[in-house]
Length: 334
Image (tube, rainbow, N blue to C red; front, side):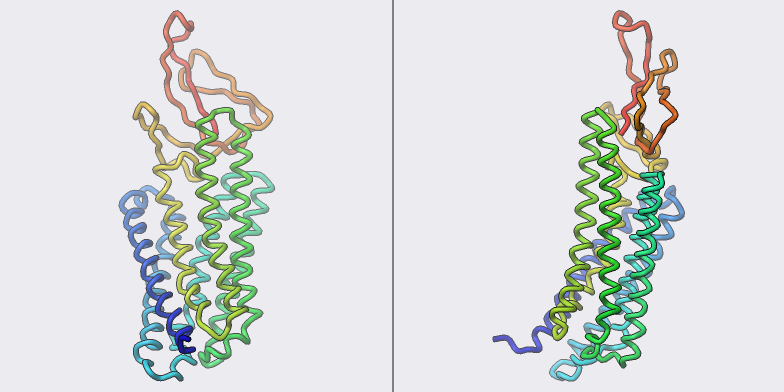
């Protein structure tokens, strides 16, 4: 049987390695973002990315200092495993801050996708849950400092940790479910097979990202409550914020390949002929039909009851013997 201290030093060591790995993935995606998107992207997005980048750098420094102090400097000293260095107290808040920034982005996306009272209400609830978990993460940091950084006393913070991590899980579930419901509505509003396929791809991407962060936050809470005497929950805590950061960067960097997005004005997609097609804001039709405005190529007239969809317009040339018109605007809406 392995010595009991293995369940203390082992999770710290593994958590540190995985944290470095996910941080490396984040910085690669950060490089891609600033070389491909940042110059013409929304200031809101750039601000979020910069804030998360600062938090990630700080977290990397704090994680390194915490692991080095306990595992290296405290080697052979079991009493070193019972207390945390000052850097360890900052980790909960840094994780909560990164999570908040990502949840803020998805709250904005839910609002932009839906643009109705239900979407706005969901976005408001997501924002409130994000603020709750951010406040709780700050409370965990403050209370841990007041406990003298004694890891054995962390179990007394059960209520605060439950509010923090359960709020994170609830927020992730709500924002993932809201986006999926809106996209399913878009899918039912179109008859174009390619549009449905693109929306299915985006739904799958949303589920993957949402499930990743939700599962890790839930496991972090479970391990903290069930196994408070080992450091498995600390291993997951080292990785939690890194996963959120990578989810955001993956979403932002995916826009040049995705046909469905909530931030369309800056993006382009490629048609089957290789021509660039502008992606407009998501809008969809509800209880209405498209009316082609003959004689004016590339223009579609739709009824006034508009909802967010993506509209891609290209020119299609028609032979004279098949139509009296030389060109018609052909729009795919999804």
